[in-house]
Image (tube, rainbow, N blue to C red; front, side, top):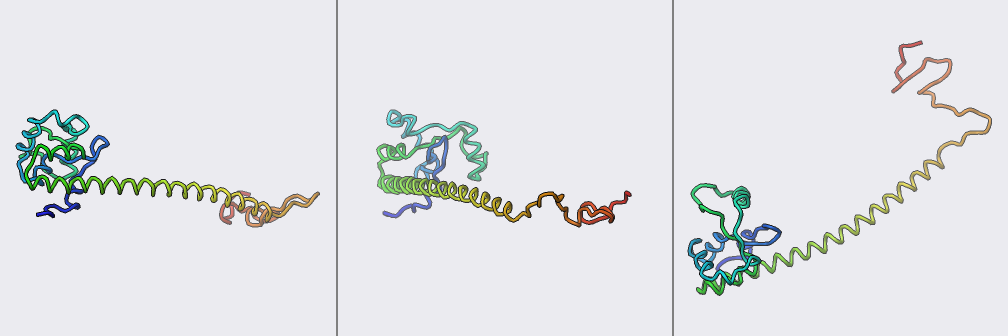
Length: 189
């Protein structure tokens, strides 16, 4: 009974809402093996244990967005927006729901939240390293562009004093037909 729910199953039920990682009342109820109504009744009987940073009610817009995201139908389900529980709120649920299953599932849920937090911390450091490398590459790119510009400047033939610069023959040559564009003769004379 220790491995009731896997961490992967729990992590798939953790959503980002209002900049917080939360779990929905209906998902928690399913994991605990109780109805959503009974879970919410237990919470309402102990509402002083659930301040706003532990639990909040979803707005109709958030509920609509979640239904679209999760792929649940908008009919036949809940009649009002559900509740979202933060990691602290889930921990507090263990004091409200005291069945053996609820305790074991709560332990797994807390582990899932910790694992997600650690993954996010690792990704933050990875992003910082990527940004540092990107800055270095941009600086090297600028230095390479300057180097190529200097090389082009050195490779251009220098005009000799007293002689007019020579234009390439394809673009214009005196005494011959004027050519424009890609070597096509213009119709004008």
